[in-house]
Image 1: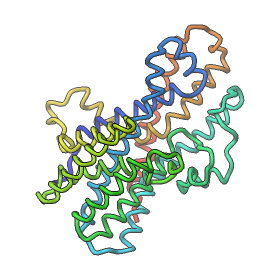
Image 2 (image 1 turned 180 degrees about the vertical axis):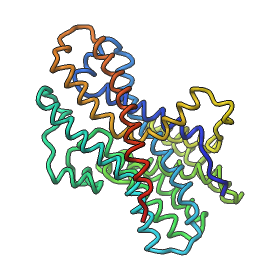
Image 3 (image 1 turned 180 degrees about the horizontal axis):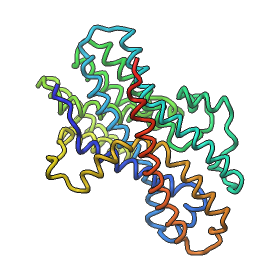
Image 4 (image 1 turned 120 degrees about the horizontal axis):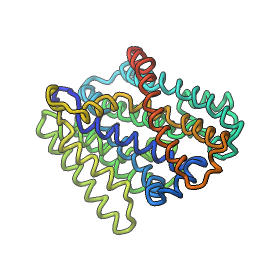
Length: 353
């Protein structure tokens, strides 16, 4: 296995996908979204319809990075204690900024309910609902989400847990590649097309598995493993293309293209320090804070809509104020993410079993 190093493409995709999902939620929720659509109808409609596809980017990247961290266990002797340690450490890594964002969102939603009469604000949170979120089972229990997008954190943990089980349970990479390929194709062609499975890993493991295969095909030292993973990755792409003659699923194509990009350029390092420009430094900085921004931004959408309605600004026709508030949400989310990252996420990363 090649040495781990900062990944330029992965970091860029993290920042791009996080920004896209924030803009998608801004185009989806509240009076601000409705009024902004009057000014920029084409852009806002595109963000509403296609911005959610950023999830496919997240999933493929998550599979790629999970394979990077778990690959050392593929040939190790199975150990229940090692597996439990892996899963608990993953939970702890996700948990601290997630809880902080949930609590902050609950506070913002309580304020919003005083002025905003909109379905996206939701009813007052219950103890059962909060506890379900803490254990990542709110979707399984069919409970309302406290914040937009937090369902993804639960799915990410499920996917990582399943992949960890695969890595520590199978004696060879060859068997692992075959299993991941079969499960990924099953997900892409069947489970991912039924809303009945949305609360479970099987709905999303197709895109996640493509990320895993992209890593194994591009970054393993064993030529045989790379070749088999490459064949699997290309074959799944051909299966996706063939299945499109029956029904076109753009998200599957997007996931495969992202996986292919990671296979080709996923191990591209950052430019040398003395040649880094402003854009490169922004990518490196934003990548570290993308998870916190993803978690915290919905609270600021609530606050922005509250300010918009409580102050009477929504009575002004035209929607220009709504656009300004949208930009304000993006800026404040980035600023807040910086502090969540520095004060919560970084210290919490030291918590390990």
